Length: 355
Image 1 (cartoon, rainbow, N blue to C red):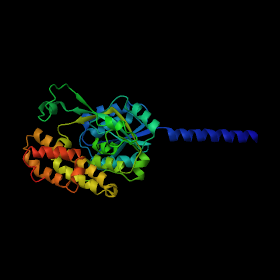
Image 2: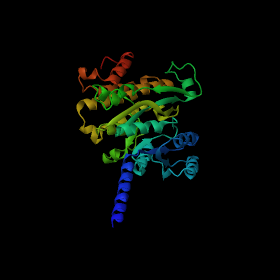
Image 3: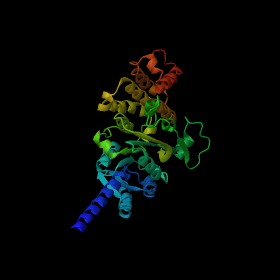
Image 4: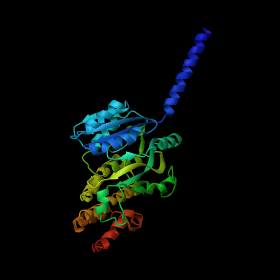
């Protein structure tokens, strides 16, 4: 009887230890939305599969009509931790939402099919996740410009020579790193002015699902900022790793390089305004978010220059965007970084008298 009791105790201790280990172990679900990305998929998936750690790859085939699904199936045959979710073409938001629903691991991260990871990305991220146990880990990334686009670009004169892959380190998170977990006076503002994209941000799965955070449907630009800002507004514990772990391909044919981004900005901002998190946030937070969206207007003017479109075609939309900020007083507007930049841009073009 004594031996039986000891055996039961030993089994219980082993089970308890296994349970504690599973709770502490960092597991990652990588969500990869795919639509006609056959030209890029191999590099993307290879960069993921070479990572260390415990992870699954949830690939959402969003109704591709090229060889994307064939490539995905070939990888799934070789790697048991790749899962494929097929759906008719519904757009990137619906694809990412399907990935979130399917994700089973402790943390979720997103990698677009034309991007790729640095070789030790997960090893570095997992160290931070174990150390801080955050709801969100922000990491840095490289901007990788399409070769032809950079050579032909007119708004970026600082690019004089174009190697095959021209990398520019994005350093938006450097200041934020000083404030983790955001006790600094300006950390709140810096958080919203840093990139709102989801590229290699690690979100705790339970946190996202507890707060019902998803990507807005029917939006083809800046939908990821809506997702990320909603997460910020739910008061997460945030950790920051400024080191770039992700390579973000800036393609000439991407939506973010479109001449229509100025008009798209108002659509995505309206989606942000309709979220419960925005409606419940305080005046200053709403102002900062509104101002952060003005970045898309200035980016839109750069895109228009690249497409040889006269600036005048975007002036009315830009002016209307600035007018929407007039509900804030002049003292408040002094702290609105993008408002001041855009206003200066318009002043130089003779449209400032009514502002």
